[in-house]
Each structure stands twice: as structure tokens, then as C-alpha cells.
Amino acid sequence: MTAQIDAEGRLVHLLTLEGLPRQALLALLGRAQRYADGEDARQALAGTAICTLFFEPSTRTRLSFQRAAQRLGADVLGFDAATSSTTKGETARDTLQNIEAMGVRGFVVRHSGDGAVAELASVAGPGTALVNAGDGRSAHPTQGLLDMLTLRQALGEEFGARRFLIVGDVKHSRVARSDLHALRTLGAGSIRVCGPAALLPGDDTLAGCEVTQDFDAALEGVDAVMMLRLQRERMEEGLVDSLDDYHRDYGLTPARLRRAAADAVVLHPGPLNRGVEISDAVADGPQSLILRQVANGVAVRMAVLEALLGPR
Image 1: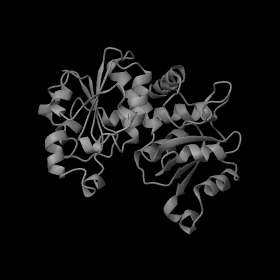
Image 2 (image 1 turned 90 degrees about the vertical axis):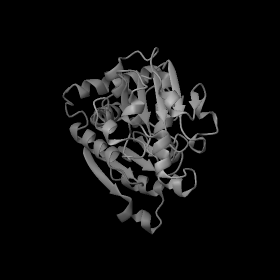
Image 3 (image 1 turned 45 degrees about the vertical axis):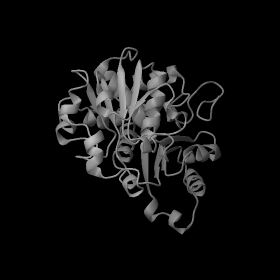
Image 4 (image 1 turned 90 degrees about the horizontal axis):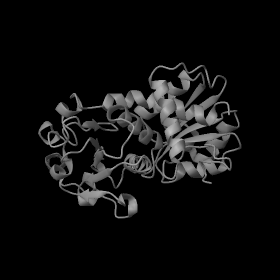
């Protein structure tokens, strides 16, 4: 039993995809696909209050959670850290518990600290559910789920014979970690990881992956290329020489993409650094599924919120 699964095997929080049972992951993907296909949400969460508790900036994740909750009929409360009592010294725990005392049952939390959402889940009251909307470099489980949904739509549900490539700043990426957890659970045939040595983790994050710094070689024959945002502060830290050099070595261009399988697809979690990790021609091209990822984000987050807060 984990902090996000109760003694009866039910999902009570969504904190990480690491260790999430395969059947639970498949159930979420199946429900999300039905919502993506247009199934009526049936006001499943009518009368339920959900708060988007974001201590970091966000566009896609925050808005898609709000849209998902609205489509399920929930009452949505927005939290703006910049204008909240956190600027006066209030802790995240006190913020959560004060809002919880107002009758809010669901919290979608983004935080800069590794493991911060799990810590908040540990002090939440019975019947309160937390969703990790990205914490530190630890996890971003709904991004991992929407990436898997997008890949299944494009490549089919069996990943065993497929080759996946994750490119860029894996060391600091919570998205990469959640994608890796999900790909392993879904039985990916091959997972390649490519990036500058300074941006690759030194722990067991990449266990079982084919790791290389040669982007051209890594692209050969892959079915999906999952690009990561280069966090520009890494250049200030001296981990990247220049944006031009990074694009030269790790930028995805049409010429490079031709090394992949003919029907290979391209993903990116956003926001895009155009001309750095990805060229305009690829980002806007026929093999790009970036906007489909965004659309699928609403369906996935509907499935997660319903699973956590809907009728049992």
C-alpha cells in the first residue's frame, strides 16, 4: 500500500506514476479516452469544490485542470500565490488546511519542492484528494498520463515493439521521470534517452534505458521523439554553453527527424523554446502531436478527478 492507494487498492491521491499498478494506469487511460471521444461527463462532480493550489506559474496544466473540473460540474476555486497569505509567511500546509476547512475536497497542487505534494497529502483530512500537478523535479503524473494517451492514439496500445526517445534536460525534468515510469509500466520495448552529460541524472532514474549524447544516432528508427524544454537557467548555471550550441547538438529539425521511423511522432510538454530544442517546421509539422497533447490533457485530468472524487 502506498500513500496514494488505500488498503482496498483504491486511488485516494495521484502523487506519482512510479509504482502505480498497471491496471490502475490503464483504467485512467481508458476513462480519459472515452472523454476524449466526447463522452458526456454527466456532472459527475456536481457540488464538489476543487482548488487549483499553484505555488508556481503554469498555463496549460492549470487551465486544463480548471476546464476538466468545470466539465465535470465541480465548483472551481483558483489560488494565486502572489496575492495569497503565503506572501505573509503562511505555510503551504496551513494554506491547504484553511481552504480544506471551507469544504474543499479536491486540491490540484503545483510546488517547487521535491515531494511537497506527498507531504501535503499526508496531513489532508479523510475524504480529501490531492493531485500532483508537478512538484520540483520529482513527478508530473497527469503529464505522463496525457503523453501516454497521445502515444496510444498514434501508435496503438501495445508498446512492446515500439522505440521511444526522450531528449534534453532529463536531470531537472519531472515530466521525463513520469514518462519513464509510465513507459516502463506499459512495457515499452526500447527507451532511449539523449542529452548533454551535464543534463543527465547520475542516479538510477535511467535504469534500463539506452543512454547516449549522440542525438543523430539516438533518432535512428524511433517511433516517438519526446522533446523536453531546455530550462534557460541551466545556461546561466554553466550546464549549457549557449542556446545556439544546444540547438546545433540537440535541436529537432526536419533533417534530423528523417532519421526516425517514417511515421514517427513528436511530443513536447510545453512551453516551447522554438529554435532551441525544436524548430518551427517540426513543432508545426504533420508529425507533431503537441496540440493533441494539450487537448488530451483535459480528458486525462477529467478522468483523474472523477476517479478520486466521484462516486465510489
